[in-house]
Length: 270
Figure 1 (cartoon, one colour):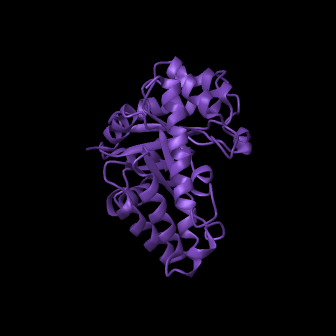
Figure 2: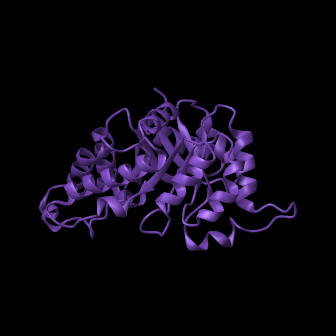
Figure 3: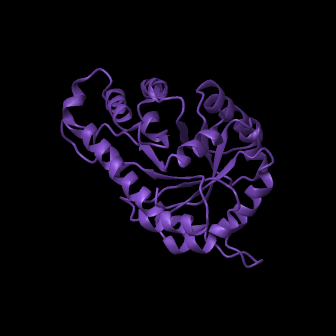
C-alpha cells in the first residue's frame, strides 16, 4: 500500500487527525524521566493510546536531532512502533541542491522508510525532484505555513498579481507527474484556506495550526466539506500529546483524539 492510499483509506474511515510527535524532554511527565529512554517510552504510550483513532503520525526531526545520535535511535525505534497502515511523516523540511536532496531522500524515505516527508521548495524544482522519484512516497511541499513570519516571504505579491505561496502551489501541480505531491497549508487563518482551496486541485493537504496555534477545527472541516474535498490531514501536536502531564497522560491523549474525531464525524454527518 503506497502512502497516498494510506491517507485515503483513513479519510474514508472518517479519520483526519495527524498526531504530531513533537516530544520534548522538558514537557513530558516527570515519572517518565527516570526511564532509560524517556522520549521513546512517552512515544510508545502515546502511539498505543491514539493509533486506533489517528490518520497519521508526524515526527518533527528537531525534537530528536537535539539529542544527537541517541535522538536518531529514538526516532528509528519510534517508527517501528507505528502500525503499518498509518501514514508516517518525517517533518524534516529538507530541500537543497539536487545531489544533496538525493541523499536526504535516500536517508529518510529509503533507509528510515518514512512514507512521507515535508520539503522546502525555496531552491526550486531541482531541489524537489529527488524526493518525487518514488511514486509510493507522499511529499508534502511547504506552500503557506502557520508561523507569524510566513508573511515575510510566502505572502509577497508577485508581478503577475499572485502571492508567492500561490505561485508555489501552481509549480507543485506541474511537478506532480507521479501523483505523489501534497502541500502544507497553514490552518490558522480560515479565510486564507477558504479563498485558496479551489487552486489545490486534487493535491492532498497537511494542515498545521489547529489548536494551540489558534486554527479552528470546525472551520477547516466545513471548508473542505463545502468544496467536496477529502484527502487531507489536520496536524495536532501539543493539543493531544500534552493534554495531561500526569500519570494518565496517554489516556488523556486518547480521550482528546476521540473527542476530535467525534466533532469531525458530526460535521461530516458520518
